[in-house]
Amino acid sequence: MLWTAVLLACALCCATGVAVAARRGGRAMRCVVAQMTGAAAWSAAAAVLSTAPGPSTVTAARIVTTAGALAVACGGYWLSRVAQDPHRRPDRGDLAVLVVAPVITMGMLLTNPWHQLAYVDQLIDSPPGVRWGDGPLYPLLLAVIGVPAVLTLVHLGRGITSSPAHYRPHLRRILIGGVAVSLSIVASMATTSRWHHSDLVPLGLAVAALAFVHGVLRNHHFAVVPLARSQVVEDLPDAVLVTDTRGVVLDVNGSCRTLLTRLAVADAIGRPLHEVLPFLAPPHEGAGARGEVSPAPGLHLDVRSSTIRSPRGAPVGHAVLLRDVSAVVERQMAAERTSERLAQEVSLDPLTGLLNRRGLHAAASALPEGGQLAVVIVDLDHFKAVNDEHGHEAGDAVLRALSALLLDAVLPHLDRGAAATRLGGEEFALLLPGLDADGATAVGQRVLSTLRSTTTPVPSLGGTVHLRVTASAGVAAGTGRDVSELLRRADAALYRAKGQGRDALSVAYP
Image (cartoon, rainbow, N blue to C red; front, side, top):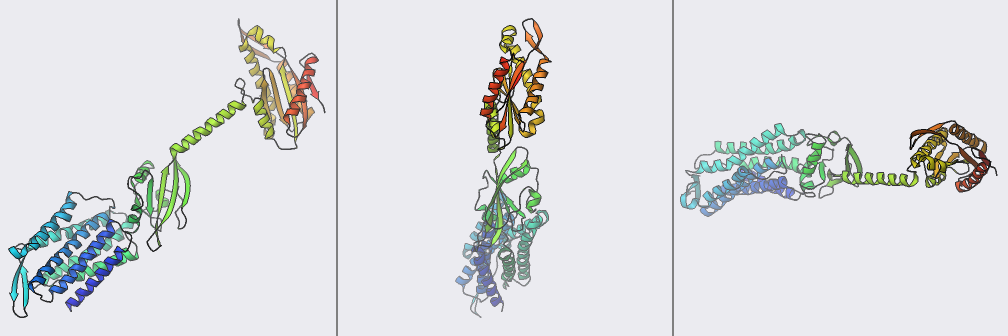
């Protein structure tokens, strides 16, 4: 009956190994395949040994059994390491367990027919065959195989207590398989004498296979992280984050760890994505999503997400790529600021800060169609004399003083789109939407009255002098946005005011 149970265990281990191998896998999945392959070989060889075979068959079966035991032990050891750290590279201790110990064990076993140190063979007549017993170095052989198994349990125990909560079910299932194998080894040793071996380990291997079937195949343990790792490289400059279907973070690459440090986020693994990066929308199944976020001053991220699927098309997680585009955004913002500055320079008068003629036409074109519109042109009287007697600095001071008066004049009308402009030289214009000729005339008269009653301090050759200047104005009003026609008519009215003796205002009526 025992050999029947052993054969069933062999079949179960074979089926598990094939099913796991069919999955997309990384190192963790390959470890499971190695374990199940070794377990199947161990079980098959144990079934052969239970039938009292001949000498050559015994030797071959012992080699297969030992090789299978090494595959189970070493595969379990490395699985306990990479299940907790998918990026782990073997160190010297790992190499000693995974390479040195198996080489010593297999060397001892392959040369056993000559030295009989591991096993001692004894021919028997009834039934005809070979019985074999423990050699002088058999305990050493057990120790070499047992070291990886013991270390596996130690690492798994530590991992369960220190790993994020989301990883603990993975490790518990591996631990269940390891404990089952360990108990079967103890049971085998308890029922074994030197010349009678009872190998119950395949039954423990069957329990381990069932644990892997439930954990790896049904719950997709180890499926998401290796799948994502096959798509990106650890040193990819873009930050990559992997979640399961529930949005729990499973893995991050090096650039993502750097980004999380910059954002003062710790322990991302095992936490919901909305807790780790609350500024990200939760990924969802379907077509890839893309957007841009700014989680911190000066930090701009281009975010893309996609669904990770198993070979059968079932969603098993999400990959989120975060690209730092801060430099690109900063260059774009600088270009926009430069463009705005240049546009202002083109539309503004550098001396007074008022709109120039180009700016006047741009402001008029932005007005609604069909509304009332008035223009007042203001021109300083005898301005050339100011420049000739006091210098151009004095003339500039007078121009700036008049500009301030004009800005005050349009201030109550800014909500309608009013503007004060310098057309050139000592000539200025007011754009007054919503006013007719009478309303614009009142505005112009206030400007002229304030200007004639105000003195302007200006630099002169002898220090500072206070000048009193006057201006003339022309007014034109109409409907629509054709400011060119209004300027022409207002300019004609201005010259009439100049001809009337200056310091006067004239209106151009239709």
